[in-house]
Image: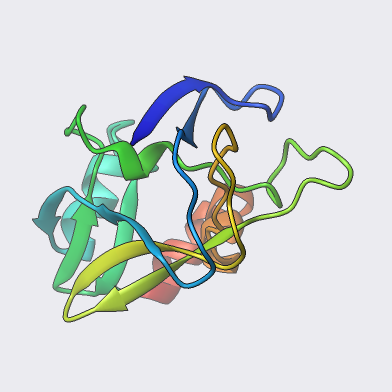
Length: 137
């Protein structure tokens, strides 16, 4: 079972944790949210309602922002701004038929936090949002 608690990463807020083991290759959770276009995602981001969009195509993005019960959005990226030496991502996103999943890239033990690489586009967007928005249009 997955659950939320304070992340082990500084200033990261809540994190996604497991109380059951996962083996490398196991699907941990589907990333759930409202299906929107990239244009709509940009509009929501401009209103301060962004940060939880998984881009599949320009016409199919998964927005977990408005869904409180979407646990997948709480998986943090250990390679992000708040790093702890030696802490590494243990999962990755995988797209299957326009759905997104978090999949274990190594064995994960009960009590561990789920960390997933957000991708370079995510971090570029935070650093240079105007360039990113032009690129994805």
